[in-house]
Length: 175
Image (tube, rainbow, N blue to C red):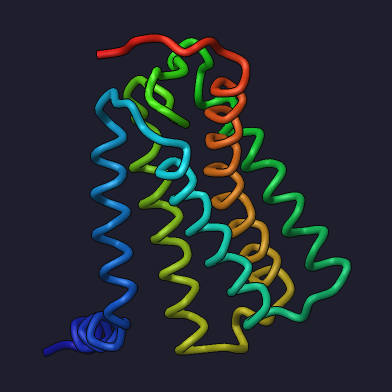
């Protein structure tokens, strides 16, 4: 077996089970998002919550919390939230008759963003395990902080759009 295959096997075999469970969950949610559906606000909050909690955990565990760290992270959150907000067109959403629910058209951006966010966080996690000093270098640290904020922000922005339509639109019968 060559060194690269041994490395990949080692990385995959040392990945905690919860990471694979999360990966499968994200794929399933991303695939479901590709179909129009009536969804409760609580279900819509799951993905933004996962990425926000995961990112806050990474900040607290792996970073020195400073004004600069928080500023970078907030810049990432705001940039991501603005992106997520504009990705969801208000015309693609209606307030559903079901309690705390919206009817949304297919979201073809959910799966790619979830997979990209997962991949970046996974690679950064592997790098942290193999070479913790690499992620402490200023550029890598800034990339990790900002990218985590951007990905969490995208899902927060989408959720914000959904909630905004829910609170401003009249309930409509769907399906």
